[in-house]
Image (tube, rainbow, N blue to C red; front, side):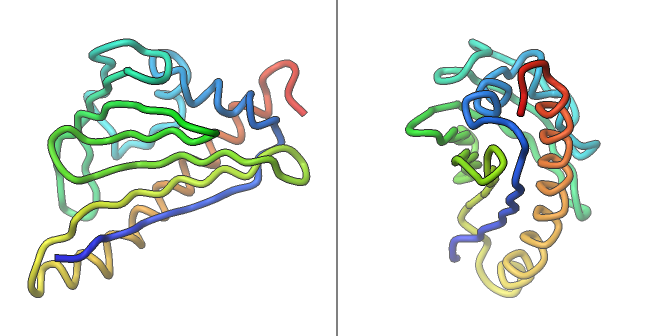
Amino acid sequence: MGTVRASASKPIKAEPEQVLGFLRDYRDARPKILTENYTAYRVEQGGQGTGTVVAYHFAAGGRERDYRLEVQESDGMIYERDQLSSFVATWTVAPGADGSIVMLEATWSGAGGIGGFFEGLFAPLGLRRIFGEMLDRLAAAVQTVPGSS
């Protein structure tokens, strides 16, 4: 059983603090960037940054599971750690030439054996596509907010 990683990144024409402000808003802003893979999304605690707990059902590639993520922040990074598994999603927002570079990376402990081999091969490809769509939606959302670059 090894660590599985999936990631996507995108330059976004908005200042890092504006992007982080959007990402921290789990009640109103964050649902706007979720794809159809996410259902039953709800905020269970907080709603703004560190200490927030969100839950949802995720389905992709014939697999489905529930997540319950607790949010922590540090130095331009937002960590969403699943309380039900080893899954961690990390949003990194850094200054870029025309605003920000945003990366979304997920890691988790993969299954063992042949199933783990295929998980490590195919899950990152599917998640990279989903993450790319979320980053596109994020870019569209923050670039239309008044005061954006």
